[in-house]
Figure 1 (spheres, rainbow, N blue to C red):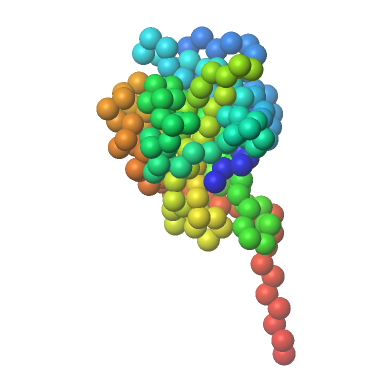
Figure 2: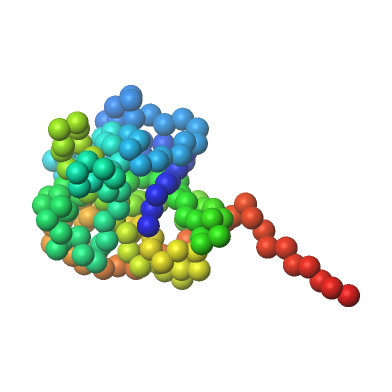
Length: 195
């Protein structure tokens, strides 16, 4: 699952590097946590070039109750709610890293080992109140599975072009295993020794 992520100065530099003509309202400064229902920059494509847009995180849920913030990569193409968007409106959500909590409610931060931004695979759709995006999730890899059983589907930079522009690669990318991540926590296990 992915229920919160952050953007930071490194994310801002990456967005500026990828997108030729960046709108001023997409400029990022400092670290900011992104929660469901927040607006956030996402990378889309227009005329075979990357572009950046400000979309809202989460599709309206059934009966307008809960937001749908994630979709399972393994089954998204089978779901009416997601299929058309996934086939025609893919995006990448740029993140400095993301957070997950274990069963003891301890918070962990996950990011790339080299501290470069993560590209979270997603897709978007237009609704009455604007354009909204969802982040795809997959089974947790070795970096995450002791904290949570799901994780975002993370793209490598080399996969960005294929994810956004090449429809023939969609299904293949949906089944990839994300690379190794660095894990941090504010909590440290303390060992007590008894003499």
